[in-house]
Length: 331
Image (cartoon, rainbow, N blue to C red; front, side, top):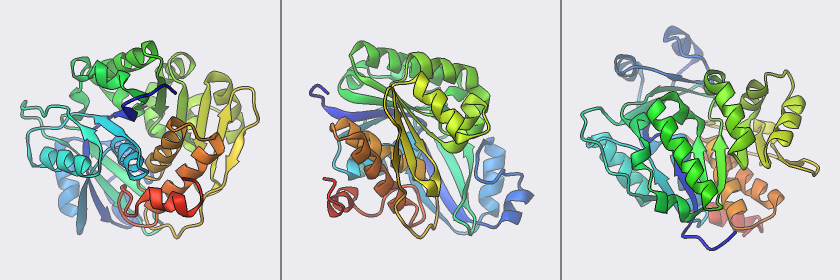
């Protein structure tokens, strides 16, 4: 990959995560589908927040988490996402910059609040997300910095952006700028429900605009509407240059065209909270790929990052990922 200022630039929803613990009865009581993300309005997010017990508040958002992971590996990461001129917006901007990620998107003064996601973690470590998007999807094509896109080896986009037309336009513009500059375009499918909402457009993107597809087992089988992971994997391998498919405790599979799939084992870990597992796997893989490592090494970096983040509460690494990778002889 030619010389670049950044390894990866991510575009996604800028969200403050509010993380708390609950039991399955709490989820049922509040109509929250376990293990999934649902979009909620301001009233619902306020009611849930009041009903939750003690919480931890950190800046989040799927692609933002990935950028922080890349920075923890020693990579050069930048993020494009929209926050408001409010307390949560200031928390987000300070937090992501303190983690070593370039963030220069101007805050909005429209009066619409910064996005929040209430992350409910059950005793089995599963996370259920209730997201109030606030100002974050109002990111539009005028706020995508073309020079920033051209300065990165990879542009990483999240499927969640497809939930609003303005953000969708920014998404397509970024992919077009990246392609014209000879950069790689990576896409995370984000969530099974997100795939259900946008299947036709996602398939078109995967087949025509995406170089690297990142998805978990639920998302990829939903995308292709098949009943087995193996069938979905065959479709993905045929449709895109590189498909990176995660399977929780079963590890991950990396599928490149015209070669045998590569299986990467999961790192053994005591699971506390699976929030951010996919985001951090993407961080390790994209960092490794941007730096020219083998696909197997990139996958192993992903496994290291995912294992670290599920060993504690929250979607951000608490240990330095570069040090963990060096301990495994990968850096």
